[in-house]
Image 1 (cartoon, rainbow, N blue to C red):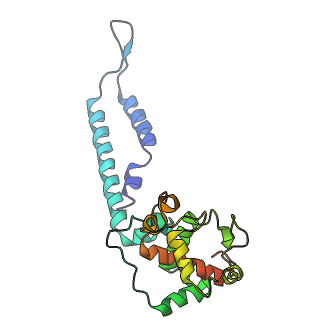
Image 2 (image 1 turned 120 degrees about the vertical axis):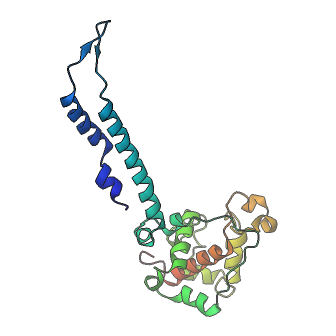
Image 3 (image 1 turned 135 degrees about the horizontal axis):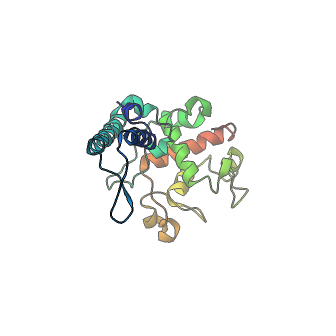
Length: 224
């Protein structure tokens, strides 16, 4: 169904041109109007046929678009990044963090990046990190304060590995020039710190943090 418009309709400009050439071959000579201009006689049959053909193409295009949207196999061919296929939505009023076992969080953070790079949490966390964080933290660096990068050495130096909840707090509520991304950030840190960013839901906050820690444990090497 998805191929019908291309097979039957083709490029409209080419069909129109070919149709005009066939019609012109069948038209009688132009007649002269009273003011000296040239007037082409109306070919009613060809006009009706072209209108019907155009309408059929539009119907087939609509049907094929709907078929692609509903067909899981076609959806798998969508090569857009995960975040574009599933853009973040404002957190609902009853948003809650998903119940993820500590063992699973540890697996996410310590597995080699190449082993988990196709998992949904990793893809989404990576896309959100690129969109929200990579401007100041490209490749795990810190463009504002070089000594406070996201590599393990810096995280350990500043006590974040011993108290990992500090990382969670900064991502949620910001610190210094970094904004916070939690829905309740303005209540905790004020609108000047958080009010200019679109908040992330609880599941996304976890995905971003786990992605960051996974890359830190991998030394931010490889393509990630």
